Amino acid sequence: MDDRIERLHRWMEGQPLGPYQIEIHPTNICNMDCIMCGTMTTFRKLEERQAGFHRSMSRQWAMPDDRFLSLVDEAATLEVRRFLITGGGEPMMRKRVTMGMVQRIKKHGMFGNMNTNGTLFTERDIWDFVEQEWDMIMFSVDSHRPEVHDFIRRMPRGFKLMEKTLMGFQEAKRALGTDKPKIVFNSVLTNRNYDQLDGILEFAAQKGAEDVTFIPLIDFVPAFNVDLRLTDKEREELRTIIPAVKGRGNELGVHTNVDTIVPDNIRNTARMDEVILRETAPGDDGSFASLPCFEPYLNLVIRMTGAVGPCCMVEDRNVSVAKQSLKSVWYGPFFWKLRKSMQERSLFGACKTCVYVQMMHNAELGRQLQLA
Image 1 (cartoon, rainbow, N blue to C red):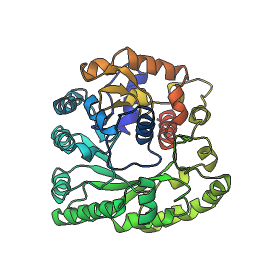
Image 2 (cartoon, rainbow, N blue to C red; image 1 turned 90 degrees about the vertical axis):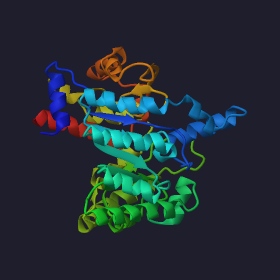
Image 3 (tube, rainbow, N blue to C red; image 1 turned 180 degrees about the vertical axis):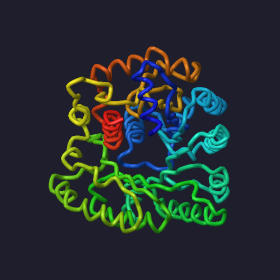
């Protein structure tokens, strides 16, 4: 049985458990300025509205290195199974604490995953990840065409640097005879790449990636300085492309979620709360399996400041692990309030921009719970 399902069953039986996964953000600073990034959009707004503000100033809000490392130790005592190092920003912008967490996560025998743009790895960094037997690295890849990827990511030569890193991992894994870390791609679906999905899969196969997750664009418009949304016509084109893309993935041996994407739902990425409630409609018994979201029972997100939440969208800046223990936060009033809201099927304002892929994961967990 999936460990998440087993944990949710324990919650159903009145036996609370620690988080299944901790998602931790070492920094909000990034060497890219991606058009569709919520963090960069916020920074652009602040720089426009507040004279003298620059995004680099946000470093002063971050927890110290030793607190990030001690949080890994606390997580082990709560029987956390997985860590995701992400952001916010690019984890390798704060390399010392990121690599320190990598070492400590593996020391405790937890599954380690990291999200990256792939541009800041040295050869030594690559070998460290491979030698530590780090489990997975998710590369953000928005096209197999350098000019498209770099346009979206707002970084000249970003594609070439990322490609060099991917090749470095292929070489190091081959030399050590290991399949770790597993390499996967995350690709945000936009009007610049929706018709290039087969090319992304082919690039993934060439560079040793085993999985490509296509993520519908979160609609922050008018915050974007370039409109990347698909038109109605493009969504219909995507609908016709999906079967061939899935078939190409099967041919290449690259797993993809493309067949789970519902083009009609992509239209609603600024109203995902409505989609969530529709996709998780309760059965006659209104059971635990019909909750709209299981994140407050499984996931703990830690921002660079120490602020916490159950996902990347919901947080309470007044609740922080900068000074409080993980245990006191996870079993404290804030998370119990979140769980009660889910039981009442009462979503939050931030749920309007829920990540589509996460919504689908939660709906699938509900289906598995009903069958278990």
